Figure 1 (cartoon, helix red, strand yellow):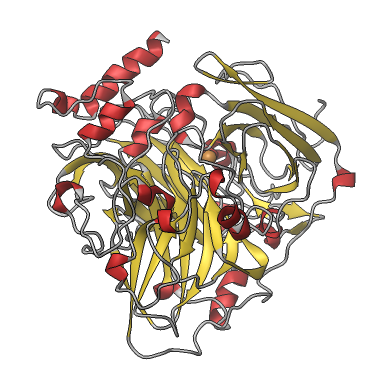
Figure 2: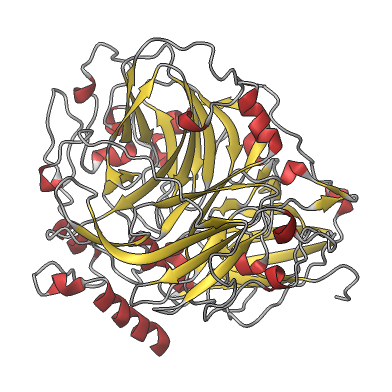
Length: 605
Ligand SMILES: [Cu+2]
């Protein structure tokens, strides 16, 4: 605990809470007050007539551009720009002993031109709101960090420097990574130091052949340093990592998926600002920090100009603790092509997508025939950092019918959601309660402005189209079943009656085997769990089959309070220690985590 307190005080210094002196600091533990200081207005009724709600700092929503994070250029390709592993914190052992992907004879980084990337965590000043200077941390000083684009078959090394005065620990979330790159919460990179992360960009082997159904697509990287992960993420340490393989290139080449120019990552984050513009973050907040400003790619309620054609969007919920159910205000369908790191086998049309913190949705939107303005809205009401109101899930069972019929579940009535979707003649400006309590039920986060001539014949993807192979795991082939009971213990969580110990490891699945993991959430909170080290498949939620889009591959799954979720996981490729963790980084201080160590083939349990 004293460890925690000292980190916290470091954090307060580092985070420039000098704002305290200027009267901007909010009393710890006083949530209501913090929001008041951050200009959270009193509840308002949905507008009956055009209104211009008062927005903090005088910002008129949808008047700033939505940027697209720049793609990180490699520092070098093929030749090491620096000696890999020469930094203080070294390098992945997987890089040094040159084995990966179950193919010990392949010297991946010698055969393929390894790409070398460099990221520097540093303090910078960012404008979430135009003209409002907010001190942040960023990879490369950017919010979000630059997008790392990788290709299956081309390994890369990412050197991450910590130029902050607080510890960091980078976590590559998603895909099939060695434990080093998945990153453990206590693998700190201390101030002034660096660590080399080896991303082998490979797929696991299945029956002696590469299993391309496991090629990842949409991943992200972010901080997970034990004790400060919540703050480090809130201050900005997160970014996209997008990967392509030949099958996905082929989908683009065959004009099924949109090309890179029309493939836009959208990072969604809620934030709260003090009157002086600094971030209002309370370390160790008892229920988690919820922001009342809604940023996409680092800008509050921005505008994205799009052409009249199909676009691919990689949606990332990078909020610390907020759940999102995303939908277009005009009820246009979303063509869902993937969840988390992987593409679906077939495209699926949905009304909305639900994202817990850390979860991704890969969607295509067809703007060809729509109105000039389209809003991307969040429908989940959430006033408690520990859980959303209700249990938002994709599909008919939990979906649209559910929230419309059952207003008491927390989704509000149509009129409460701040827009009137039936009134098509309305000026768009008056459909929204853009800011305020009522808008929690439907907050427009992003406005698309649709321009130019119709481009009907670009990107043909539609509901039911085949995208890539999928291997359904067979429950009968499970070699072990493990139970993970999440319970409250004091101010935090424990799993199977054990508090999280970074150095301990209680589960040891063997490489090459399939296991059934049953998570039972005995708390009242919603726990989004990330199980690293490749994909999982959800087979049952409270003894029922999951909705179609949730039965495929995933790395992040929410176990709502009282729920039991059964997951199948094939352990493959990399031996090492991984941390299955609550992907709400805000819960870092609650320690909802458990280590597991995959053992090489043939190892004894
Ligand atoms: Cu994770």
